[in-house]
Image (tube, rainbow over all chains, first blue to last red; front, side, top):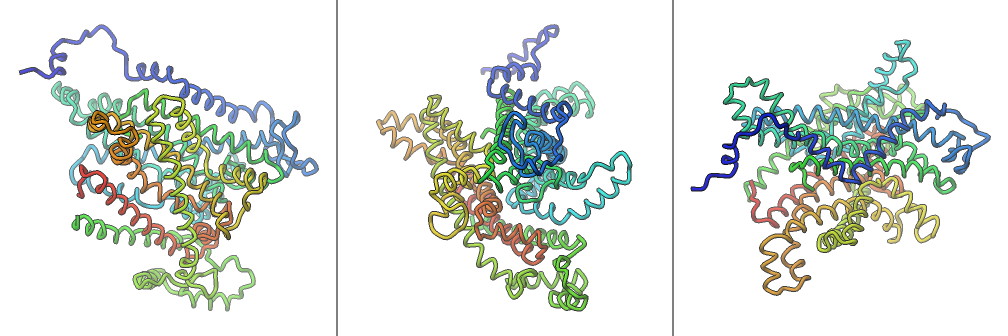
Length: 322
Length: 305
């Protein structure tokens, strides 16, 4: 009989003093070799910094109108031109980026929390509960989400205005108009984007539960808490990080889809979606109003997708192979 | 097989009921109604309007009333279009959206499949890189950017097409191209992945060893297995195409159900919103079911469970 190789190698005691490379250091070195992913990360970093710091440094205003100026093509005064109300397009792009990136991040986090909790519960408890919970996910997969997000955005708008009114009573927050609408965006998008995350986490938990190292940890007498936090969570973190990176572009796409239909943030605030909408309406005369917002938005999605793909290859996630 | 179909059909009933109930109460939960916007309405007229549409009754009465109507296949009168029923509006607008969706699906498969097969067969050559980059481009340029850009170039600059409208066959080109491109990109990626996996398998090598031509190996032997990931993607793709047409119909002024749905939500046309939501849900569930059956048919390893 030939012993399986895994047990024969386990028989050789591991050298306890030599530190092996951790999953993360390994992944990092692999990621660095993926030029497209690195480029994506750099582009994202630059864009995010520009959106956060740009308006502070240049003292640009996205609200300042100059009706006499009107729409001007890109030039030395206004690098990306101005819109029909004479507002600087670059400033509007940077402020719009804040909203778009923030919605992308926060709504993905909402989806992350829901998905991980749901998937982990189903995976941990298994059995009947698991099959019922996953059947619900299967059924929800077959539903038209966008329809429900649209309904939520239209019909929950007024209750959220009450939130706005309540917030504006605090002196500090009085200039935060439209917060309710943004909160609604977070919730509505997060509420529909968690399904795949739940599936991935459940699958991971299920496969990890039966792994030998978990059994070994149990045999060593470690407590449940230590097993969960030291052994299980770190091992599902990889797929979760990867899938979160890939959720962000999907969320941003949904946000701009809503904004394009007029269901996103309200004026004078703007996201990239609302800028694209405005640009598409006026593109016949003023091409730059469509081309620059559309270009920056596509570039962001590009970078996020390349970074996500790179992370997936680096962390070698089997869960989503497409 | 029959048990599988019956179980899935039985499962659909509570799902549709939950969707109907949730939607019904969500849109009624909010203050204001379909007649709030009309300024000229006197209280008396308003009362009459509410009476006609049963809005004066308690909510649960309205709900049971509506449920009974739906079970009889009657989606009720529209609130915003006087003298028109929701059934009539859907019968009028749905064919347009279905035509757009079908054409887009043809575009998606017609571009995506060859691109993916080419990329897989010529793996790691410049053809592969070009195909994969084009696919990534298609995924990252959203329809509402691509659509206006296509209009700008082909309709306004070159003057080949009308910028909007839905009259002649030429008017179908830009909308279905825009909507189909994104899914063509996904399909190309999935086809490439699926084909790569299949091409390295023993039965393909056997076919080659027996002297089958390269074309025959791909067409007769590899494609059937390589298409499996594409088929399982068709369910989400169809749902995406149906809801994606909301934006396309807005850009190109297509008189379809998608635009009607968005307008009805803005107008709070309760019955029209409910009717279209139920219709979309039923349509997408049915199409997903068809995709599941097709999957088992293509891959005998899967079984109906």
